[in-house]
Amino acid sequence: MAARKIKENVYYVGAIDWHRRLFDSLIPLPDGTSYNSYLVKGSEKTALIDTVDETRQHELLANLEDAGVETIDYVISNHTEQDHSGLIPLILKKYPGARVVTNPKCKDLVKEHILLTDDQFIVKNDGETLSLGDKTLQFILAPWVHWPETMFTYLVEDKILFSCDFLGSHLAPAELFVEDISAFYDGAKRYYAEIMMPFATNVRKHLEKIRSMDVEIIGPSHGPIHVNPQPILDAYTDWSSDEVKNEVVIPFVSMHGSTEKMVEHLTDQLVRRGITAKPFDLVKTDTGVLAMALVDAATVVIGAPTVLVGAHPKAIYAAALANALRPKTRFIGVIGSFGWGSRMLDQLKGILCNLSAEMLTPVIVKGYPKADDLSALERLADEILEKHKEANIAV
Ligand code: FEO
Image 1 (tube, helix red, strand yellow):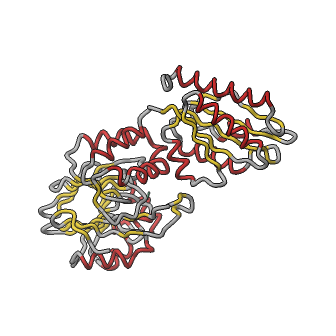
Image 2 (cartoon, protein in one colour; image 1 turned 90 degrees about the vertical axis):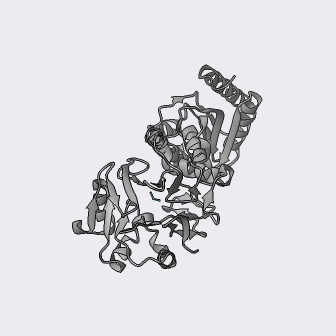
Image 3 (cartoon, helix red, strand yellow; image 1 turned 135 degrees about the vertical axis):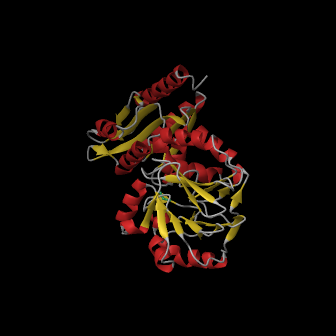
């Protein structure tokens, strides 16, 4: 791809990674991703805002050439992670006068991660600015969306906010600029669920700050550029709010059909009660889709058979994922089966320790579920409906 103009003397010079299918050896990328890097040419100085993943070196260099870069004076580092900082050493080598501009915490982390020295940095604190001549960069600390050192860079004259990972999406966009939220909504929600959801309190705080600023364009570090910022800000406001939906997410795994039968029965009983049930077979489920479902659901019920007295490892993984992502789930249930004995309830409760959710009555049965067991699942559906009503989630 070529360098693309955003405004006069402001260019997109990032890399589109169409074919990447896994991030952090963890996060599925069904739609690829992009590593967004921005070039700002002032009348006196030129700044590069973040670099790209080191696997895309050729693309960054080609785009800088395409944008007619003669020199780079500053590399702004909004965030330490290597998908953005990975090529800082290359830029410093290619443009020997360049310095890395970042905040004190990011400097410490960048030094550790990509092995730079103190003299290669210029440090800026919250609200401080850097003049490029006729353009001014302002640095805004935005800790914990999603690392402690993350910051935004605001291009004052052009009213562009470079928001780092915040408000991004793992998409490989042919169309770099989006106005219509339907073009990026699912990608942005998946990204929010996987990366930003554990930090909902900070998300709300930083949203408020952005809304108080005069921002016309938001350029995140992944995915399309928001030339109409309102839809993505509204979507983040919705996802990070305390509001939950009348939904039950049921991540489950089954070995010989007992747990699957229980999940089917519970799903049917929830639907009969007007509750949206979303079962996810963990053998087949893209964890990003499961994470997206966790954003809104009032209740999560984990379904698992017992393996050597503990929960099936795939259910343990789902519980650990939910615990790490810290969704706003209000109620948690455990259903499942065992052959001769099970300690999976205590095990799963222990794993879910980060969630301040109320435990529902568990239904854990010996062997294949019988009439009494199915009745217990109907009582669980009643309990969920009652809890949702008490919390004004269901009518
Ligand atoms: Fe896109 Fe947190 O790195």
